[in-house]
Length: 58
Image (cartoon, rainbow, N blue to C red; front, side, top):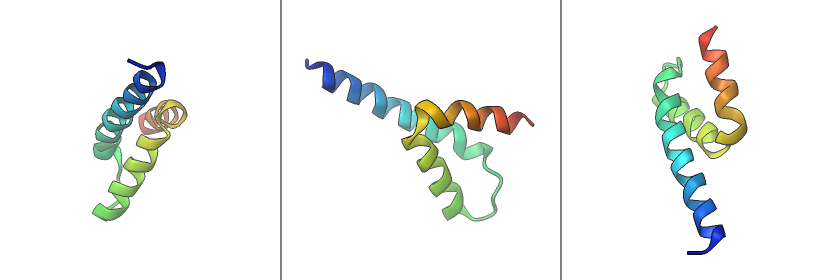
């Protein structure tokens, strides 16, 4: 296995998990906006997931 492939797998798994974590935390009425916001946070999860989780506390 290539190191790049392992990193891609870790990033992909993190993106999927963070998308499913953020989706129930969104408060918008529109399902499209909820899917879009959770998928965007999922794609940028190394930086945006901790920020989104901290902001959801308050």
